[in-house]
Length: 151
Image (cartoon, rainbow, N blue to C red):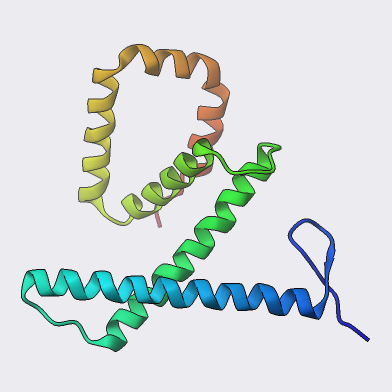
């Protein structure tokens, strides 16, 4: 008897389908690791440094896990918007959440992001006004979601 598990689209996947999906993931992880190693070695050489393979492998695994989580987040943003595919707005929203999370832990980065945001607003004031008029409620919801109490 075959074991079945739910798929992303709500259907059921057989053991064979699950194994194929795991094989694709393993292949992607291996290619990602190879790319990471190539980039790290090139950057280290350019800086006159050496980076050990275990460190590169660890960084690669962390980056791959980050990319997997990012893909899941993007899928959730698209689903929440009632779409079946990810678009640029999902990527931008995900990036904003990442930046907010990072900036909460880094005062200098938060200050730099505020400055950058203000510079953008002064360069394109008309676009900002139009966007605010059409999505004032969305901005309020996003601010409420992004606000985290200081601990």
